[in-house]
Image (cartoon, rainbow, N blue to C red):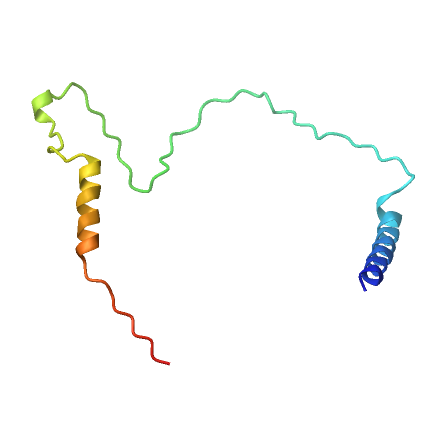
Length: 102
C-alpha cells in the first residue's frame, strides 16, 4: 500500500513538473533592465506640517516643578507580602461543589 502510494506521488509529481517546465524554462535570453528614477535625488522644499491625530494640540511647558508639588505613590507593601495575602484568601475561599448527574 505504501509503495503504491509512493509510486503514484512520484508519477504525479513528474507529470506536474513536465507541464511546468515547458512554460517556465525557455532557451530565449531575457534582458532585464532596472527601472530608472531620474528625480531620486532632486531637492525640494519641505512640505507643510500635518497633524497625524484628528484633534491634536501641541502643549509646550517650560520650567521645573518643585519636588513637593509632585504627588508620590503612597507606601505600598512588598510584592511578596501581597502575594501571600492573596494566597491565603484563595485558600479560604469557598470551593465549588460539583455534582455529576448522568
